[in-house]
Image (cartoon, rainbow, N blue to C red; front, side, top):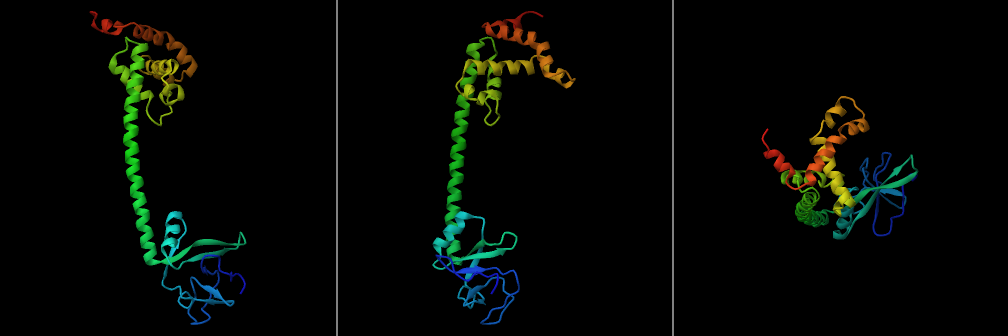
Length: 237
């Protein structure tokens, strides 16, 4: 019978999804969606004593493995791929009760994974708060004149998880002075100068940075002196 495998694989029967219309050689039912080849002739699943099994399509490796573990009888289902010239696995036939037990095991694992993700998220949130506070403290150490709220805002922005910003770099996580200064400079550039407006008006980035460099340095000089910003804010206008 051309196009049909006839030898079962180790570990259980082999079931074929035929490409052509086939009928059972024993009960004459058909055309068959699945069949077993015995003695060179096709048999339906009922005649092959596999009719009580249910089909589990491929795709979920853990569920497939556990379904076979939970089933006293199981079978591999294959179909011939003409383009590739080979049989390819389509899924398995397993006992319905075994499938139900396997689904319960997978569900328990999924619930455990969800609980672990919640715990990990809480742990990361605590770590992020501590790191942001440390980053803000380092900003205040290097720039004692920087307002506390501004330092926290810069630290929060620079250290946002998954942002790829300087605070998430190796240097940032190590609270290196270069990384902290870079975060402060970037904030001053965007918040305290017309840098963004220059970019929006078509000024090239390097030229825009050149134009606002004096303003950036003026803010940084003020922040390097304790109380300079507060005194300036309290001075009569």
